[in-house]
Image (cartoon, rainbow, N blue to C red; front, top):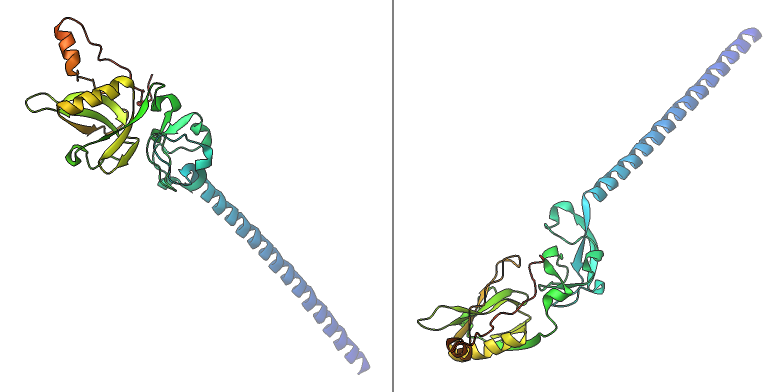
Length: 245
């Protein structure tokens, strides 16, 4: 009987050892699965992050309201990342593009800056230009004209063609019916003369790349000089707002 009990005990011990070994193997396998799952999860997160980074693009936007004509100083802008599908065509993607530039349109806070909103410093005004204001009739200002709009100033006289007094100039300021512009000496003189001959009105350009209109206005005193054989010089140069040479 003693022999039998010992044999049974030996069998029980072996079974216990086998169970322990099986548990160790099971735990090892489970740990491996968890580690593998964790690595896959980490890889998946990295892939998602990489995908998000790939699907975004850096753009420059205003960090405050900026008026047309202001120098495009980097302190007025910030770089943000946004989904590619929301980035407008022609968006400025680097602060480097702001060097030696001015803003040609009003830029609101958090508005994306476009390349078409920038002009060279020298394209905004010339050395001889001065700030001049003029009050128009309400009906002479298109509703879409705002600060930064590019316009021709034309003269209406009953029974006469509408002459271009000032071609392709930028609206620098607007307060009700009073608009301000950078004009050179000849343009200032033409505005004053034309104002007493008829009604001045504005015609807006759809895009700054459109070619500049031709100045066809000639003041009355120049017309008399021309009739008497003295050719009046009505030509003058304006800043190149189209960005071309």
